[in-house]
Length: 406
Picture 1 (spheres, one colour):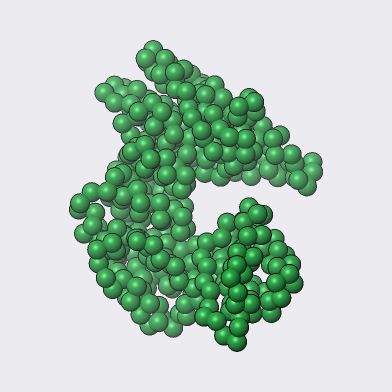
Picture 2 (cartoon, one colour):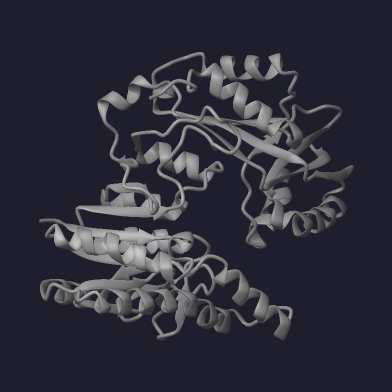
């Protein structure tokens, strides 16, 4: 039989009753003859409670100590699941991130996995133990506890699956797969049976919340199949794996929407070499990620540069650009937080024309103005006014034929 990694999110382990249900599912997989490694998130809401608790101590808690605190959420669920399995007469052993030898860099709060020494996990599996590992965490070269950032348990699961050469990594959540768009926005959204890594990467980066983007990057790099499933049903979910020939039959696989961005425009930038770098370099130095960038055609010796940043970084970015405007002699800086980014994604776009035209005409028919556009080989994104986001998603979903069953 195979080696299966099963990851359960916060809603799946929200209380002891749900932990018992998880234990039953894990036991069923074990009884089928598989070796099982389980990766767990903290109970739903616990991480936020811990953050809130820390904020009552001080406004900006030291990052190293925050990681020590936040790692306790996953430690709790790992221990409780192992106890539950043992009470059911199954051999189980819980491991923290450092015990599973998940080694990361030193970026507290958003660490990246460097490698995993899977010897201890493999020994326990050979002894037919169910190995229960606290997700979201690891340790750096100095032995400090580190955490991987929001959604980090997905990354833990895929990385561990790669390290032990698992046959599949099952990601259990509160939805039963990847959908053509958010079912909460569009009632006609349909579950996708299979999707390529590249499509899933684009959808995750553009607003789909089913999988954390770093987990998909790991899966693609190490060719780990991911099965996205619901903790609350036995239905098959969505397979995320290498591109197959039949995937190209769909021109567009999904529509995504993100309301997590803000738009900044620096007007009247002198039309001289190096000015774009002077506008954007300070943003990069502050660790703020820039997404879409547009520069207007020169007019009267100046042009305008517009770009998007995460909405959480909007105020900091505006303060930086105010200083930049003074330094380079630009006209001014203007910002807008009330935007949304709507995108169409699909491998079929590689070999078909007309996607952009259909997207733009569909939005125009709904009287939705486009403020910015960006493209890649398999996606087109448009920035629009936030209040039209859901209308845009539904219109595009219908226009690209996604309302029917896949």
